[in-house]
Length: 272
Image (cartoon, rainbow, N blue to C red):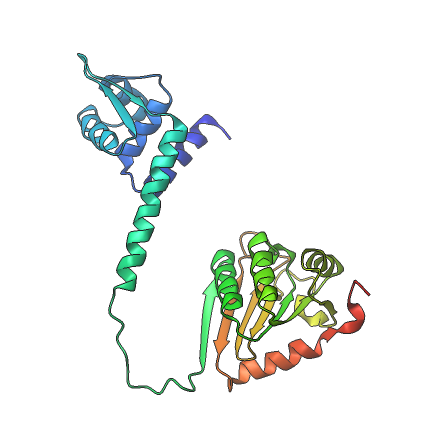
C-alpha cells in the first residue's frame, strides 16, 4: 500500500466513523507530525487554514487531539491506540442508542390474520446472509437441517451457533457438498452426524454465467433460507444472494425440504 493510498483510506474510514472531511484530514495530517501549528496542518492536509481551527476544536472535544496553548498554538494527535479506542467507544454508544430508539418505536399492527402467514424475503451480501443464517439457527426450537455448498460459509460464528444448538438437544442434520466441507463439519462438530450430498446440480456447470447454490438451511420444517452465487465468475459477481421463506404451508419450504432430505445420504458419513 502506498503512502497516498494509506492516507486516502484513513480519511475515508474516519468519515465513515463520523468525522467530517476537514476533521479527518487534519487528524491524519497530525498523525504524520510529532506536533504542528495550524499553518503546518494546512500545508499537509490541504484544508483551508481558516477551517483548520474549527476542525481542531471538534477533534479536541472528541478527545482525539491535544492543544498546547502557546503562540502560535501547537497541536498533536493522541496515540493511535487511544484514538481508535475512543472512536470505537463512540461508535458502540451510537449503536446502543440506535437499538434503544428502535426498540422504543411503536409497532403498528394491522388487521391481517397472522396465524398462517407465508412469507418470502430476499437478502444480498455475505454478511447479511450470514447474520440471518445465525439468527435462524438461534431461533430453532426442534430441528435444523443445513446443507453447505460454498466452503467460505464455514466460520467460527457458525460453528459456535451449531454447538449451542447441539447443547439444546435439537435434531440437527448437516450436509456438505464436497469432501472437504463434510470433513470440516465433522471435525468441528464431532457430536453431530454429518453427511455428504448427492445433489450435484447445486453447483451448476463450469460456465461463468451459471449460478450455484451456496447454502440451504431449514429450521423447524417451516423456515427456509437458500443462498446462491456465481462461483466461477469474477469482477464482483461472486456476491451472494439469498431468499428465505416462512410458513408451514409454504410450497417453497415443502419442495426444498423434500429435495434437501432426499439428497443426504448416510453412506457418505466421513466417520463411518
